[in-house]
Image (cartoon, rainbow, N blue to C red):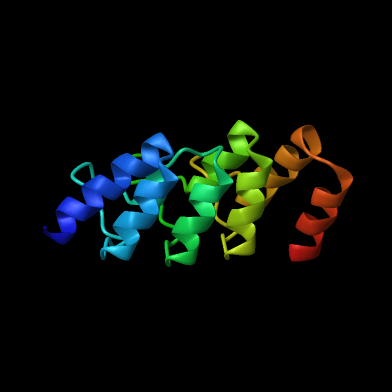
Length: 132
């Protein structure tokens, strides 16, 4: 099996949120940062609302700051815009860059702030402000 084969399988498992398959593929040598046939990494195609998948990929060395080749957004932009607070929290804990701007110039830290204000608790907001 080639790395590209493993990468495509890993991306498919991430897109469906199949944590057991993700772990198995990583143990068998899948590289979390190699792009699949659609030019996306596993973290770019994963199920955004599943913080366990995100943490597994980040523990394996996935880069949370890779921009999407079609729009320039990172997975953290996507998670913040969709209100996945737990996912954003995990991404921040693993080094997501809050200073990356979207296509309109809105910095990620602004999107995260609104995500936490509208979808979260006071404790999460304190964690975000502490990371600034």
